[in-house]
Image 1 (cartoon, rainbow, N blue to C red):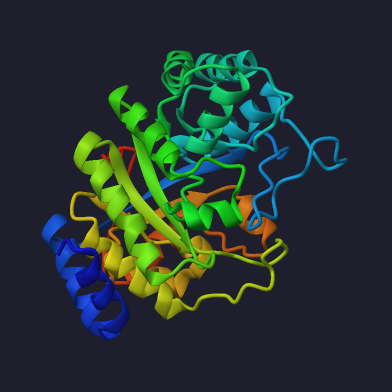
Image 2 (tube, rainbow, N blue to C red):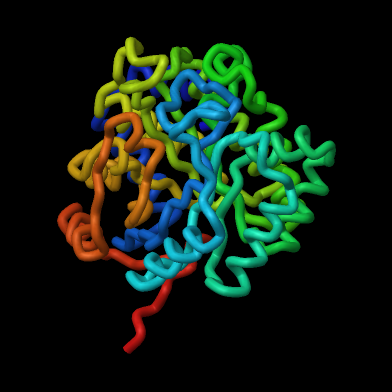
Length: 342
């Protein structure tokens, strides 16, 4: 099903269960069997100082704010060691658009991690890469080349929000617009880097704009093919400048996930977003197109800043997957399975 109008009709009119059945069939086609994957990792926000002023963010602090911070290499190293102690195979490292950090600091940090705390580094979302390019007067290609040489392994899909400029201009005026976001991903894919794709909905976009977002991702994947997975979640408006925006419900989440599984026919993996939706809906999502349960997150600051905290452990993660009728398997960032050491 490829046309925007057909997808929109299905998204808006199809009964929930029917939509779930279609998405589940698509999931089964791609992932026959009962395996649901998950990853053990840690979120490390190296700084919260940011000049992007996104309306939906409760995490950032303006420069010179007394709560602003930049973590030292030692603090970051300690966080990595703690994560590795519970079996983490990667770190997700993101920060704000901090105008005070020189480019060399990022490269030194990557080299420091690879030398002293070797682990897969999934870091620097497209908006950060684009910010580096503008701030340090470099091309996006050069930024990615340098980061990759210093030790960056893959790029997360942060800052995807809604890939429609009308919406982005309202909620994230100073952040990359659609073509630039996709352009960073295309550049990363050309460099042989894998990336993930995301969508934050409930930002005031129309249903048609949600479908447009999915189709832009599908087009990009058809061209450069480096997206490993898609993850969507609703806006968490609490404590942000969008606090008055009405929250979307669980049914909207399941419908959106299902339509994404149907629309993104060239994406292998879809993640369930239990971090924002809670465990029960996270489990239901596995019957609405998701084949991955995301991450056992040791530390998650951005969603928590908006007042949503769901945490879990490896044991609980596996129990939840089994409880939903599937067999859990631990994976790496590229979705290869980690076989248990006998």
